[in-house]
Amino acid sequence: MAERVPVLEIEGLTKTFGGLKAVDGFTMSVAPGERHGILGPNGAGKTTVYNLVCGVYDVTTGVVKVKGCDVTRTSIHKRSQLGLGRTFQITNLFQEMTVLENVLLATTMATGESRSYFRLVRSLSKATEKAEQELVDLGLADLASIPVSELSYGQQRQLEVALALALEPAVLMLDEPTAGLSQAETNAMVQLIHRLPSNLAMVMIEHDLDVIFGVVEQMTVMHRGKVICSGSCDLVRQDPTVSEVYLGQSSS
Amino acid sequence: MTLVVVVAGLLAVTLAGLFMDSYWVGVCSQALMMGLAAMALDVLVGWCGMASLGHAAYFGTAGYVLAVLTTRWGVNPWFAALAGVAAATFLAFLFGPLAVRTRGLAFLTVTLAFGQVIWGLTTKWRDVTGGSDGIAGVPRPTSILGLPLTDQRAFFLFTVVIVAIMVLVLVRVMRGPFGLQLRGVRLSELRLRSLGYNANGLRVAAFVISASLVGVAGVMFTFFNQFVGTNTVDWRLSAQILLAVVVGGPGTLWGPFVAGFGLFFVQIFATDLTERWTLILGLLYILAVLFLPRGIVSLVVRRKKTGSGVDMDHVLEAGDGASAAVERGA
Image (tube, rainbow over all chains, first blue to last red; front, side, top):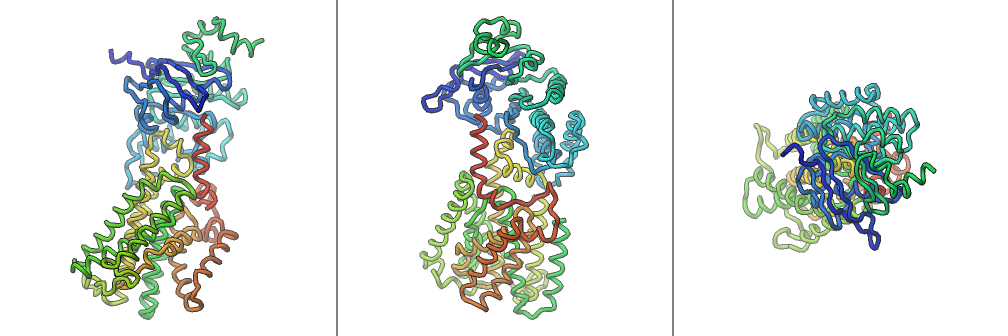
């Protein structure tokens, strides 16, 4: 039974800002290893859902569970430790640090060396090895010692994913990973997503329909804070409401 | 780099100290303590981006606890010194969790307010603290390893050793994961928390470490003068330490140490010239902000693009940045 417990369960999630219902009864479930897309027009409340799930905002009503564990009132860092790894829509990296130092903050957390307070950063061997491997996988190994602020935007978006991935999360939550990328950079990002370990569950907010239909199996479509459709990619493609509010706009 | 400079500097000061007359040896001892205090404050200012204007509270509390325990209750000076540092640490555990809930200028104001509470207590609670008279006749430990600490030169060597130990431990810790995490707190709190770090816990830890090292400086200062007065809890001392961090180069540890050390000499010369020596201090501050926004370190080291080093603007604006990051997530 244990193996089919959803890694992420969201039930009746609601968030009001003043009089505005930004998210209204959002429900979603992600099984281990599942690839799940969240689709919706601008302002549909997708990033707000992420911020509620990760603990940045307090939930008005509803429940969030990670691996069966209720985390609705848990702090951001504890949710992360329980297995939520997220990226940010607007690149959020430690700009003045080197690329390696950025990844090290994630890998030391994963290896437990984040508490080896009396060792020098460079002698945190397990975390360093893991970080260097991560950078090789991304093709950023040559840039390990330069500050993040000198990376191209596309490289920063890749590093954004790498940081969340280095935590070895149970669910990787990507927030528009290809936003603002060139076609070549988008392809590289899609490659990166395809290479994710198959047992890792992944949730992804994405506007680029080619990208999202290419990498996810399940999809949840939002409109004005509500879920209007949820199911397999084929089901969502054929849903008349979805094409009206979303697909219709972009394909007509 | 930091290590080499600090070790070389301490060696140079030690050698110089051995050939000076006892007055200047004493000045050097106190200057070292101020260097230590500034370096300790840098943990907050330069690494976490939190400018505290209340660190005299921990300096003075440690000194007063030492003085009260030794003069009124006859406690052994060594134990009283430990109790003094423990008291400063405890006070930081009390104030820290409250103060770290604020950012930028609000943090500056809150720490100043806490500092003034301690100042108020010390000046008004005359029965215990002697009010504005202070407490005189604080005994030094008689000797350590055969060194008679009543001798000015021996006390200086003792100071060098204590300061060196504190500096080495601090530099070591700040070059490990803790230092990296504190820089993370300053650069992007939300990202750091999303990686599983308790950002406020790190802030409190930095606050407490910083305060207890300042407490060590306070205890040494009280031993040296064999007297403790309200100048040790005065906000002007807090300002002087903060100024040393700004002038020295926040985030570099050794810059603030050198500046704290040097500013004490400036104070000695300036008080000879005028009673209003804070005027000179203010002038130095303006000059530093205008011409050396990254502190005196920028005179010595060509700034590495990645290295540590922080603009004070960013420290005081830190609060806006953090909340803006959260809002942007919407």
